[in-house]
Each structure stands twice: as structure tokens, then as C-alpha cells.
Image 1 (cartoon, one colour):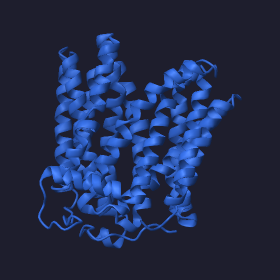
Image 2: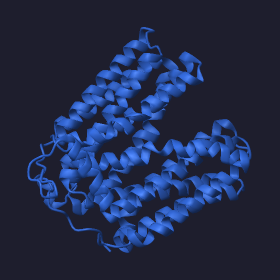
Image 3: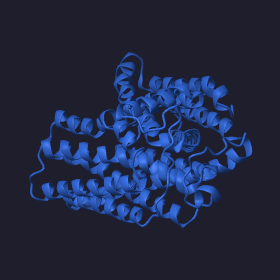
Image 4: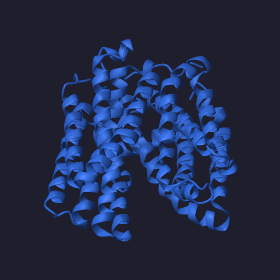
Length: 417
């Protein structure tokens, strides 16, 4: 099974038919790396600044909620607007707005005017811009790489995401925060401007706006949103992807909520070494991003996706069940490999199955369900650990992910709809 054939509705940029990973696509990856680095800076610096400046758990929680809320409130209409507009212009506009918001936050921090309302507003605006930029970026990725090369294109993107979001951004935030917290947000603004500059240099792509169905004219916004959700619900493989992602994301968020406590408690790891677990996971993700196109090319993307989910589940079981010295780092390396392989191939499958005219709405709905429901896992993790044990939470998480892999195996390994 080599994947799905290219759909009609791809852009008219030359790479959309040739499938070459050429200069414009590399420039798009540079833009993505820059903005993801900025997101990594914000994700590390904003909660830390909120904690230091307010010393209030309620205030920190309010800022964290403001960062997540746009994925529930803004993502769907953002996707519909992306499907009506030029994706290049949407990304460019979104990053310019985000740069202004980050710069305003930097000025507020430098001048000691960054109170709680300012932090909440900045968090909401920055993530709201991300919902627009993310959907439009996905469409640009498809059009500039060509659907027949999406596995390689997504492996590049996952590598850029890991390097920027998990490595570069947090490291830069740590360095800048010790000097001046406001500098973090100034640098954040600069990364968005760099990304916007790269996007401005991209060629315009022509995207077919033919929407599947009997209607020829563009419908109202409400109907557009319904079209996107209906397509996602009716397309069997996409529906399977969504259910697998939601179940796995909720389960994994439970593990993420407790790993620090589990590490310094039952595992006896020094607090200073806990962040190295995330480094091990990121290394595994980078390795998977490089390896997965080769594995999928030999065994097929469906079996590789099932294998990735299975590896992820088994790795979490190992975190809870194996307490040998060094085992948790190996387990988190495998967690990164499983998650990275799944992210590359699930994104590729989703993009190949989605017409360009629906890409924004389907991507936004997918993100809303996957990311918007993750707090549920974190909410359940504590009570479950209280009733059982910390180790049990990881075993349960792993078991859920393995069960998802088993249930999803048959539809994922089919090449039809």
C-alpha cells in the first residue's frame, strides 16, 4: 500500500505536479521553523512570566486557558476563512498580527505594565493568530510539495517543529529570561517577522475552490463550516484518524500531566534531570521524521501508522512497569519515535484525503478536536493516580493507545475510502 492517489484541486504551482522538494518549499520550511521557534519561546516564557509576576495559581491558570481557548472558539471559523482566501496572504497577515501582539507584550513587560489582563489578551491573540496560520500553512505545504511527496514534506515539517518548538524556542527563552523577560517577547516578535518575510517571498499558489457537492457558488460561512465537519464525519478514514487522535491525545495528556511528579517521586530522578526526558522524546521524534518515509515506502503507510501507535502505547506501558536505571529515558525515546512517525503519516493521510477547497476547515476541525480535548486527560490523571498509583496511570495510558491501534488497524490499512 503506497498511499492514496493525488486528488483534483491541487494548486498550479509547478511543484504541485512534479512533486519536487524545491526552493519554495524549503523557504516555506524556513518560515515554519521561524514561527515554531517563536511559539516555543512563548510557550516557555509566558507561563513563567505569569507565575513570577503574579504568584497566583489562578492567574497562571487563566493565562494558560487563554492560550488554549482559541482552538475551541476560533479554529473552525479560521479554517473557513482560510478556504475563502489566499493561504499565502493568510499566513503573512497572521504572522504580522502576531508580531505586533508579541512586540506590544514586550513593551508592556519592559515598562512594567504587563498586568494579568495584558497577559491574558496577549495569550489569546497569539494563539488565535496561530489557528489561522496553521490551517493556511498546511494548505501551502500540500500545494508547494505536491500530494505525491507529502510523506517527505511532513517529515521535514515534523523535524522543523521539533527543532523549533521543543529545542530552539525553549532554549532561547531560558537564555533570554535570565537577562530580561521582555527580551523573550521581543525575540518572539522577531521570529514572526522573519517567518512573514519568508512567506512574502513565496510564489502565489492557485487553489481550486470547487467545493464537493451540488452547490457551485460559495455558500455562507455557516454552511461552509457544516460542509467541513460533514466531510470529516463522512469520510471513513478521516473519521478513523480523528477518533484515534482524540483518544490517544487525551490519554497521552494524562501521562504528560504526571510525568514530572512520577519522575521525582517513584523513579527517584533529580528535578534538574526531568527536562532531559523531553529531550530524549524530541530526539526520538527527529529520528522518526527521518526514518518514517523510508519505512512507509517499504511496508506501506497504513501498517507503519499502526506500528507507530503500538510503539507509543508499549513505550508508555514500559514507563509505568519498568523501573530499571535509565529505562525511562529509553522509553521516552521510543515515545518520541512513535509520536513522530504517527504525526508524519497521519498528517499525510489527512492531507491526501482532503480536497484543497476544504483543507482549512478540515484541518481546523481536526486540530480543535485533537488539541481542544487534551485537558480532559490531564483532569482525569490526578484522580486516577490518587485511587491507584502514578505508575498505573502510565500503564493505563499505554493500554489505551495500544487498544486504539488495534481498533484502528483495519481501516488504517485500507487504501480505499
